[in-house]
Length: 308
Ligand code: RIB
Ligand code: CA
Image (spheres, rainbow, N blue to C red):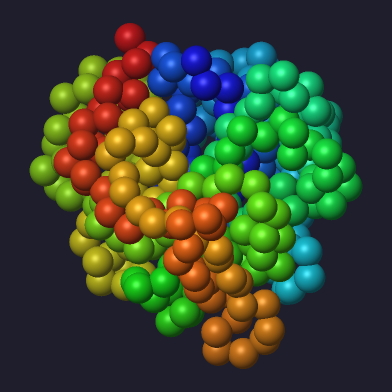
């Protein structure tokens, strides 16, 4: 059993990642912490509550609201790819279960502090503001962190929000620099790998054969993602960005990469938010470059079927 805390900015693909995580029998999801990103902070928190209820869970899995803005830069959002609600404008019922009273940063600090004997895996699928703040407020939480598995950055693929920068890093480059530079073990799913794991129509058809409500909702979310991806940049098949982090935890053998020190450009200019992996066998970051994309979708189907 792997104990995880998921820090996210739901967001269509974050929502699919959450459903996959909740369906995974071998993951113990301790808490969901949210952050401003794809949409404004309060909306990402509400979206996480919505998905928690789709999964049939209650406040036993707390959902926290987090940093409402990046550390230093001006806030940016990504409604073009996620719709105005952040969940593709799909008409979900309002969530009934309340938000935790704990701020995301305090939840990360409390959860990691309590896990020093059995360190947590932190999964981050949005801007890294919350963890950067937690590490600044309480550096010794590092003892309670086994590893960080995050979606962010781009090198050979170039950016998706500017020619150089991927959204999660672009939205808070200073936080990303703090996390990549923390020395903590990181496994990074950048666009260099998620761009090669795409929700094709054939794969969506396969997911439709999974007979759980959660799989049905995940397909709706992925269909909305494909539509918005097409209108935003003409690509028909949306990359499976955030769910790939969950599958990198449940099936790490599906991914390959090289170790690196990752530099983040934090100076204003056309390369603001660019990530540069400096490959080094001693580097703290495993920068993934390859994935068995068929295997990833087989695993996604297994996880979404886990609610049976
Ligand atoms: O660039 C893709 C990332 O930005 C994903 O995490 C998506 O949800 C958005 O947050
Ligand atoms: Ca995200």
